[in-house]
Image (cartoon, rainbow, N blue to C red; front, side, top):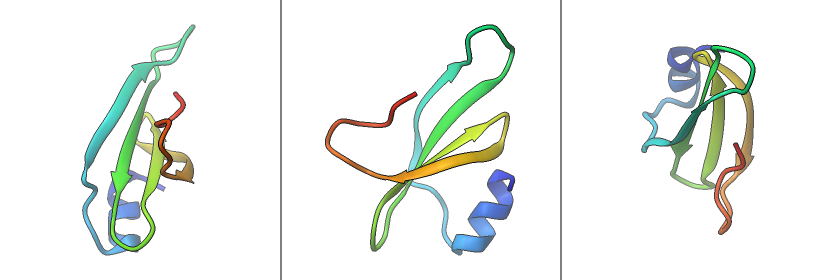
Length: 63
């Protein structure tokens, strides 16, 4: 799913980009967006498409 498709499916906008980095050995960019409201989740996008998600925690996203 693209960022826009995720936003429509969740019916809310992300809080913002929490982290980003270029993946080693490629030109791909990983971004972590925070979605809040009820349970909070980090959604990981690679080149604009959802790769995985996880509940937020005290440690921070693993990228």
